[in-house]
Image (cartoon, rainbow, N blue to C red; front, side, top):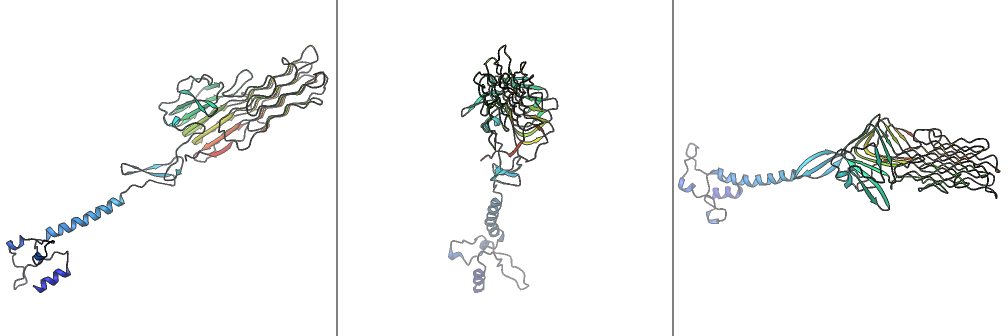
Length: 459
C-alpha cells in the first residue's frame, strides 16, 4: 500500500492501472464492485481508491486541454482590420475579407474618394447612369439628376450618376459652374465634346461677363481702358481677363496707359471652383467702346473609377469687342479678351489622349479710319487672334494659346488725336488634375500648364 501511495503522489492527475499482477506478470481481472467506485477528488478519504477505468479520467482531462486549444484557436481567428501596400483587411461579422484599395491606405482602412468642393454623400448616393443632354443651362439647373448645391457663398449645378459616357457635343451655358460626380467610370469618346466656352453673346458655365464699361466681371477681371486727352480723343484699350495666367494689358495712347490686367495667384487648386474672368472694356463713348470678352466656364469631373478622355473638354474665353468709329472724332478703343475657363479633373486614374482647351479670347481692335474688329473667340481657335484695326488704330492682342501662355498686350495707337488702341488678349485658364494612381495623363492642353495633385485626404 505504501508503494501505491508513493505512485499516487508522484503522478498526481495521472491515471494508472493498478490491477494486481499474477505470477506470470499478467493483469488479474478487476473487481467490479471496487471499480464501480471512482476517485472522488474532493474526498481525501477516498484517495486510496483508484478508478481502473482510464478512459473516463483521460477524457475529462482532455476536455480541459481542448478548451485551452479552442481558446488559442479563437485567439488566432480574431479579425483585425489592417491596410498595407494598398490592400485592406476588412472585418465583417468576425470574418476577414481582403480588398484592394484604389486610392491607397489611410490608417487601417482604404482611403475614401473625397470630391472637391462638395460633400462626399452626393457621389455615394448616385444610383443610375448619368446621361447628359446636348444642352445644359446651369442657371436653371433643371435637367434630370441636377440640383443646385450651395457651399458657403457659392452655388454649383451638380449632377451625379454611376457612369458617364459623352459621345457627342454637350454645350454648357449659364451662371453657375458645373460639377459632374460619377461613382464608377466616365468616358469622353473621340467624337465627344464637353463645351463650357464663352463667346461674346453667351456665358459658359459660371464665366465672368466682359465689361461694358470699366473692369471685367470675375475675381481677375481685366481693367478698363482710359479716355485720353482733354478732348476725350485717343483712348487706351481694355486689359484681358486673367485666370491661371495673366491677361494682356490694354494698348496705350499718348499719356493714357491701357487697362491693367489682374495678377493671378500661385498654387491654384480650384477650391472653391471658379470660372474665367471677363476682359475690361475699351474707352470712349459708351456706344463706341469695345466691350470686354467673357471668361470661359468652369467644370469639375469627379470620378471614383477611371476617367478616359479621348475627345475634348473646351472652356475657352470670348474675344473682346472692337472699338467703333463715329462721324465725329471720339472713336472707341478695343475691349480686352476674356480669360480661359477652369477645369478640375479628379479620378482614381485618368487615361486617354484627348484635349483640354482653356485658351483666352483675343483682344478687340481699336477704331481707326474704320471700326476695329472683334478679337477671336477661343472656342474654335487654339491660338485666338486679336482683332484687326484699320489705318491708325491699334490691333488687339492675341489670347493665351499655342503662341503664348499669357495674353498679349493690345497695340498702342500711333496718334493721340484721332485713333484708339487695341484691347489685351485674355489669359489662359486653369487645369488642375488629381489622380489616385499618380500617373500623369497623356492629354494635349492648350492655354494652361496643368497642375498635378494627389487626391484629397479622406481625413
